[in-house]
Amino acid sequence: MSQLAKISSKGQVTVPVDVRRKLHLTTGDTLAWETEPDGRIWVRRLVPLDIDYLAAVNGTLSEWNSAEDDEAYRDL
Image 1 (cartoon, rainbow, N blue to C red):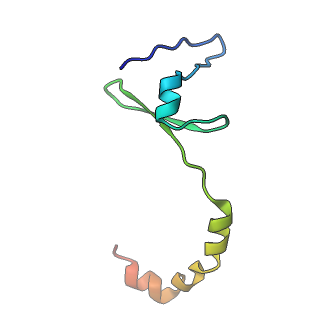
Image 2: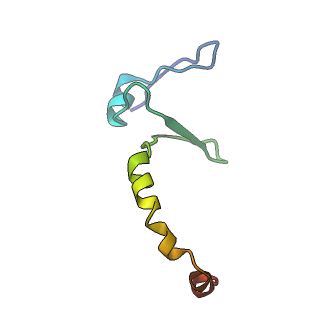
């Protein structure tokens, strides 16, 4: 189903309510716009990174950072 929206003088667009519901959009969400050579445009909601989780995992990643690992995985 097509949804229409107008672009404001500032380049802003109101996302139609049906689209917001389908993408589970809320205030402050970030949208990614991807363009295709044939003129198609894809819009998707970006899922924010869990910074606390990434910080917790970061300490365990050093076990994969050695000269032996570099040698073993060099050709991948």
